[in-house]
Length: 208
Image (cartoon, rainbow, N blue to C red; front, side, top):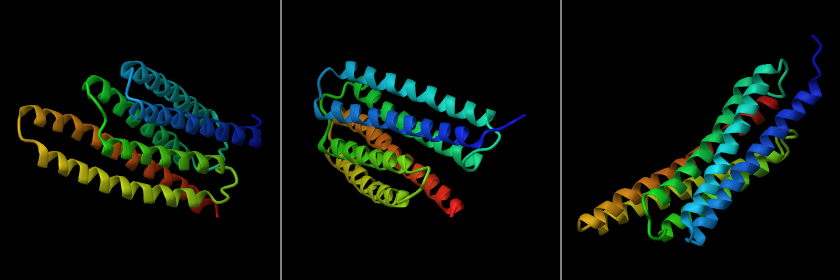
């Protein structure tokens, strides 16, 4: 059986760019939801659709990985990168679904801050993925993602502590439980962005 190296390499890079763009579409939709908090269900359904598209792209990458003899970088890294991007989008969809199903009346300033940070982290991921083939300057975007993850941790911990301080009656406790769940999901999204950055950095190290 004859294998052609270049087309197979190109296809993986194309799929990762497509996947990263789809994740970016998802976080942009989430940012739009919390920034203009109207028609929540309709905006959530859009994010849900984006997440389903992401699942299909991830499946395409796994299928390509299974069927490809020679890969542009290690098979484990391809699998981890695809899974990591999928996890980020799952978290984004999870935040939107909780905003909808928990009937959150309006997003808190801290929630908006966290979404902005994740939006920026995903943009850094997208920029790094665009440079995945050459790896030129890709590490600088990974470093920014690590910084953003630290910022998200601080905001999330501070926001959750403030919720406990304010919870005085049953209704406030209910709100605490809902918001804590959403904050935790946002923090996980930030963690997953850092995981993606770590995979990209691993690819860089192995390629130099």
